[in-house]
Image 1 (cartoon, rainbow, N blue to C red):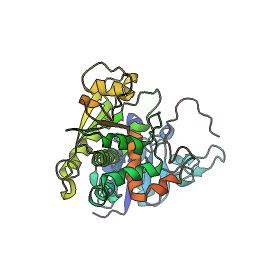
Image 2 (cartoon, one colour):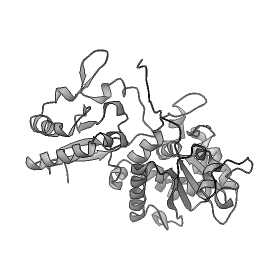
Image 3 (cartoon, one colour):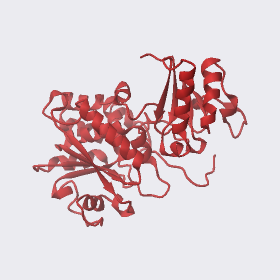
Image 4 (cartoon, rainbow, N blue to C red):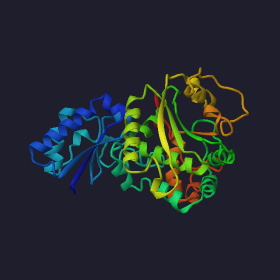
Length: 362
């Protein structure tokens, strides 16, 4: 169905806590009352990133950005904006310096200098609809890797990109993959470290809630590169929405033949399971995380051996965090040289930050 207008409502944890799900329900009711449900689609997206101003509602295609919306505002948005074509001025963002209303998020100070790579789909797609991810080149990178590239070529592309681990250590991702690829075993594992333990940190949560398929696709690409057929996502149980959306995404990917046996008609097979952590900060360290997944106390151990040689169940294991993985499909599609030109001399690409507490807006 072709819609004339789309209303995007933030469905991230922060906005849901402020009743964004009720806003969605009320918008749908108002549209149905006006017989507009076939012309205007309401979509629950992932986090827009500007949680301070949530719940956020964005009206497309004119990109109008409404902030601190309440369920009672839904009727006015439908009557004024959708039907009459007039922006609801009182819900627009006010520039703190100019004291003027800004309707387009592209002109807002918070957004205008951002280059979103890991967050490229967050706030734009329904994270529970695989077809929307596919419409934005989703799983094209996986298809390219397993049908056009050799495993070593994929690893070399990641090495050339300069991507470093986004979990804190900053180890070169391509080099990590290369280490894991060199060890022979009857079974290898790809582990996604989604145990985000730093106080006030919610970068990984936002990606998993807003674009879970990007993580799944990247894990499969890693699996193909290092010779692994099984993936594990270690996620803390305190992230129920992220868990739900990952489960949905995995199920959809299996239904579409993008996970499971003989992906894209090749001999490559890959499956993903979720494992839940109890929230211990130390389990963010990869050896402690692996011990926790094995059912042991989550305590770090000395290296070597590194997980690439002997990790989960004493098998070669590659561990990357959520944000690191979210960059992988974009690098494969746009090329290592594109990514390498972004960032600093030693740290290529972009970095997602979570801002919390008393922030100086400069």
